[in-house]
Amino acid sequence: MACGGVAHLCRHLKMAGGAGLAVRTLSGCSWVRGSGPAVLNRLRDEAVLRPGFLSRAEEDTLTSELEPQLRRRRYEYDHWDAAIHGFRETEKSRWSDASQAILQRVRAAAFGPEQTMLSLVHVLDLEPRGYIKPHVDSVKFCGSTIAGLSLLSPSVMKLVHTQEPEQWLQLLLEPGSLYILRGSARYDFSHEILRDEESFFGEQRIPRGRRISVICRSLPEGVGSRRPGEPPPAC
Ligand SMILES: O=C(O)CCC(=O)C(=O)O
Image 1: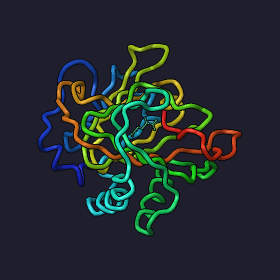
Image 2: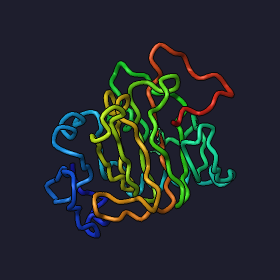
Image 3: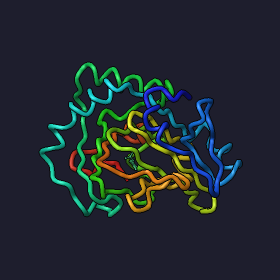
Image 4: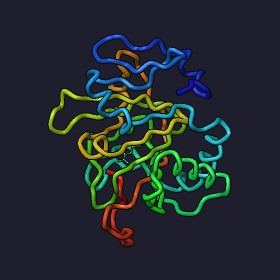
């Protein structure tokens, strides 16, 4: 894991003390914290974070391609299952060549050769006060892997074991990072994006601005594509 394009943020972060363990990198930055070594070990290959996955130019490519489409929509405050607040969203299947090349890199990094990625990519735009409550993605709409790119604002994703809530993980999602949730991290842990007032990575305050995420999912097992009119797979 290299600091790379995210060095700007790392420089401003004095990394967390307090409860929990952090995975450190050579640069001294850490992006993953857990309730203890057991959960960090358990989810080592199942909750994966790649800070600096996108170059600054790639972040700009995606953002400028998405902006016109997002700007036409209003922020909403009552998601169909109340899991998301302060958001607008779209699904996209047609991308510029430059963005397709980025999504191809996501596919290669996150999905196995035997997995099919849903052709509709989910784009979620959270306003600064927007947040996502803890949830486990429905197996009706999503297979075993979720991979998300974060743009614009840093945020904190928290994973909590659904049966043993004392087991948790925090991921610091910087702009340009890629997270991958698969297997146990996807099925046995809920995930959420913390609201601004609660946006701390350990003791480090991570102020929330507007955040766009580009989320790729694998096809639900044993299921064809979603029918037109069915709700989007998020949450
Ligand atoms: O915005 C994100 O990266 C998280 C989206 C999410 O919670 C989901 O796709 O289930």
